[in-house]
Length: 268
Image (tube, rainbow, N blue to C red; front, side, top):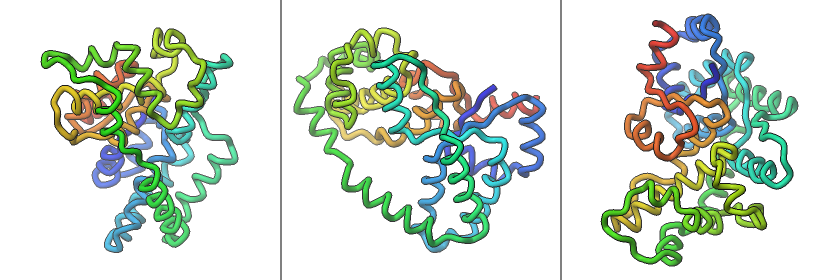
């Protein structure tokens, strides 16, 4: 069984599940952990709070202990780009980092676990600045390109509407990569290209809130990034009950489990 953990699960494990016990339990159940560089980045954001040094060291020590038995996958944007390239030229999206990049990611985890924070702190600050610069005014764009919607519309109506899906894609940073790829190719079998389609589904969920509820959503595409990456494993574990409910609509291509369900699998 291949598993991708939400960030809150990693925090729960670190605080409540001794790493040697966890390694033994997942090994006995033949469970493979898929780990994203996005996980590293999010934990690294703790650098921005000076009071978090002990927590950072504890988290990265836990991750280091599991690094040798984890599969490291690419960042979200590269998974999406690979999906589009797969649609264009055939083949199959391989989510894993190269051997060199996997070794580099493990080395960063090790250095931080040993208290070498400065390089990581610099990287996270630069990454935060880039994100602030690159975030588009997505909500206003959605309102601009779409007419008002009827009151009884459902999210599923949005999700299954190919015109809406193309509009979302054309608003995204991937529009040039998707040029000349037909709607039928991308959307008829969405599970074949799960990264790009889950990303579109997530943005459609936000659009649904903006257009149907006429309200600023309290969920953003970034809140779904781990769910999108979880397509690499086929199973996603989260402690966020709201995400479990929404996630089954946004990403119907994988199994979504709460912590209690996963705990029964490894300890039942």
